[in-house]
Image (cartoon, rainbow, N blue to C red; front, side, top):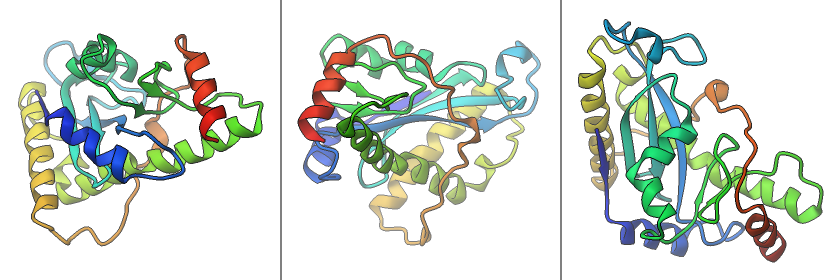
Length: 219
């Protein structure tokens, strides 16, 4: 299950209205795990790095804390980078249909449209780049925390089939956006999702030079 809003909305949010320190941001991408009961079929595929059975949910958020792209269909053992690569969002960025700039963690490869941290920064501009990327990226962790706080069942083990769980997750994402649109004020804090399940660092294979030029130009 997935849903997506129009890309012009995504572009107008971040590029015009986000951290001045980290320019040209279109959206922030990450994945979060939703625990499920042990499925009857392909059980091993749902075991994540924490040894829980889960669905690995990819999301992109805007600067207002809304979801602008959610993919909820992959078993918990699936790596974040694969989910992006197989998603419509990733494919449309790869073929140039979508223009803009996402930022993500070091579990993703570096592309011209997806900036990730330096694993071993060596210059002052690279260090500053990492600092401000981290400050900008925290919003997706806050969004996951608010989302799971708003819908408490997302915190525990959902006792449904994987297919029904994915439908439920997508519905909760839509309702989360509606709550923000209606100025639901129950989120008086900025809870940040626990980072224990963050990706291991992987070597970015593409477009290092673009990232180097970006860091040097802006930081």
